[in-house]
Length: 253
Image (cartoon, rainbow, N blue to C red):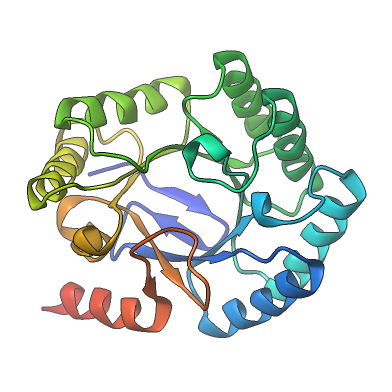
């Protein structure tokens, strides 16, 4: 059994996979409107994709947006993510800017968790982990491959390295080129659940071909899945309402 991690009221590592819905607005108006819509859908957690917002590099803009989002979500656990261009995000920034933006989120007292990309410079990764832990913020380590699916043991290796770095949750998203790739991702997830249960893991095979991986987490060991309320943040995401029905059906059958 994997270790349980609590992110606000969201408990990862037990029961049904939890559902996270993204906010991907570019302006303050879009972000607030999406936050209101997401709140109505009542996912288990909300991800604010900070890289989508225009002007996010400016402290005042980020601070105001984070405050507004937190108020509108009214207690829903909040994951703050700045996805780099290299891993499918909207903006290309230096490691220093990435660390500054995430550091502000950590110290705001409004974020429950932050996403830290595994392939950033080791110094940046370690300092962000230490900063988050000092402020009791959960760290979700992540790696995204939008081109391919690495071999099973490479997936396992990267997830294990995230655990070893001290990340509280290890996440990997890959792009399948065949049905075999989807099976490989699921097998790697099951191996993590059985042999490396030190942290919860989150895995997904993206796109239409990988949709099964977003629904089968309880069977294979992925603790969280991403569902949409409006605009998706990655290919293959399922609307929250439909996703919840599927997860509940699989859980009770």
